[in-house]
Image (tube, rainbow, N blue to C red):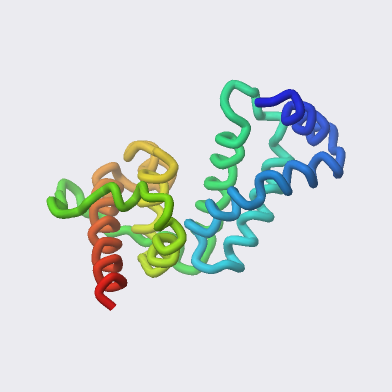
Length: 181
């Protein structure tokens, strides 16, 4: 973290509005992209972003500068997004499938790592059921373990694994349809 970033964070901790605006302007684009991946609509993503920044500013005193500030902020925003999903009508829906394995021998995982297709993938991901999309985001993009996902979402590790595999298969089907049509 640069000295300037540290200064801005310290000024934010002291409640300085100008510093808070600077921090918001610097991170709003990246954090909005995170919100879009979890939200069901652009409006929901905007709500999550706003709630997330309120929480970031409120809990800024908890940042210990032991890791990256952006990583800490991202974790806060993801937690707000998950809380938002839980509050929505119906909440997150998962199929409890213990000890069921899904084999996807022909899925190319590199498709999830290609930056140039990110915008198209986000659009396709919004067509996925919320449970699939949430687990896929947490595992692939946020680097959560299946145990962390299970703890965060209140599901079993087996359900997390099956949801991930089903999400990959579902997304693969969406990709094939979009490429064919």
